[in-house]
Figure 1: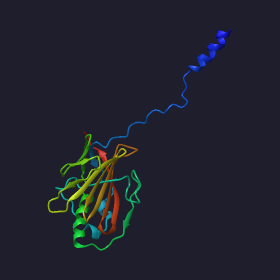
Figure 2 (figure 1 turned 90 degrees about the vertical axis):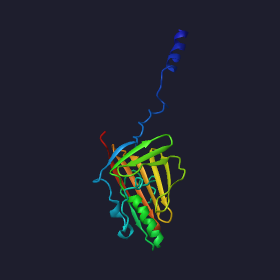
Figure 3 (figure 1 turned 30 degrees about the vertical axis):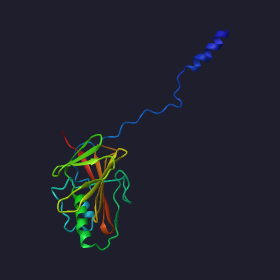
Figure 4 (figure 1 turned 120 degrees about the vertical axis):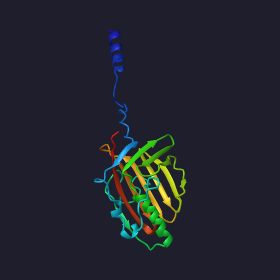
Length: 216
């Protein structure tokens, strides 16, 4: 009888319990790596959101590396992360001639939108290749890179991962900053690219490009 009394508690103590166990790991976030096609119908028209006086002379250049730039999870106030509609500030101040030229250069970076985009990744870099431009190889450690542009101002470039998003920032001295945040749509297979333009004289705008997966 004493044996039965002792064995029952022992068997109960060995019964596995799920209390306090960690939940199963969530599925990994979708990668931005791949070949993408611009969805013109779903994307914002950046040129329509910038004042006409700002865009004068700002035409896309076929030989500029990729054209875009990018950063920060909705880092320009008024635009929420992961795709809410953009906000805009228009605190325009008079520009000097040099500022106007430099701002047009910055606008070119913001408005050039590759219709086809290929993204590859290594341990230390992300490579962005548009269909009509040279590849842009961006370090992922946030260290400053300098791009020398023939006949124009140098461009300061920085890149880093923000969680599963990849952020790129391009700064033109005296002209402003262009940022891009690349991330996979949380509810589908699309790639979102949030573009922010913060120009000379307080001009700023933010808009979104949407890409669909390209067939292999």
